[in-house]
Length: 289
Ligand code: SF4
Ligand code: SF4
Image (cartoon, rainbow, N blue to C red):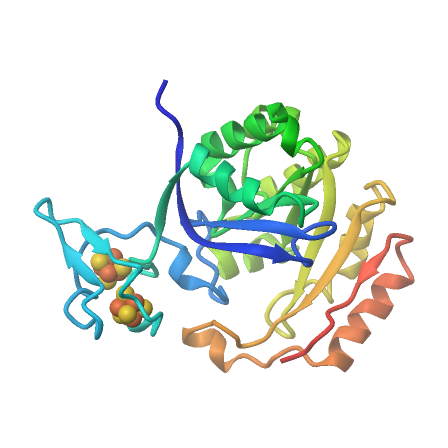
């Protein structure tokens, strides 16, 4: 049987903010949301090989093959990111196509220094068959038995999709971007019904590790809807962590660059209203830049 392959935008060997402990994080290319405030907009789409970024590469690290596909030579690339600036399609030519075995070999190289792996994105679950095969093989591998397998997701996956990965999944982190349908639709391009369903379903199956709330003052509605948010969180086990993220300008483009950043006092106000309503552990941001 042919192995699954993933389109990977980045690998981080160590992270302590993408799940419990020290984790290796795989960021997959492609997302089914189109957030106005995305802080990694070049991970949203798969490259369509239009070739617009090729000629401008100052290091000749980009070329077109005889089938018209863009080829990236990582050895020549200096990561100046000119290609990402040129791309009007919210994509990047700088991706790796990695098989499950290739990713496993990277994990083996790091296995004594990490407590688990997290698949993030883009939207991780867009490449669900790869995740399932990878997690299954980690669980079958005696030398990797100590590693936990986590997914960081926008929560848009259906119940049947979660069911396929649940046997191998140790935990999930899910973003809730806003409460009212119109706000969510405006902010990300899709409604939040499936996100809330995922939060409830993962919690019911004891796989919800963390719910993440991004506070964007005057744009998202999480602070105005704090009673409804608390009502949802109070239906989740107390072991679920609530992580508050403050909107900043790093990586964003377009109209969201004009939005006010979330200041520490604004975040503390939101925290204090939520603190009064839920018993769960609430994690505040450590930096506001
Ligand atoms: S980041 Fe893009 S434009 Fe810059 S050297 Fe690498 S491939 Fe070329
Ligand atoms: S990365 Fe963007 S500009 Fe470059 S070939 Fe792909 S779609 Fe075109």
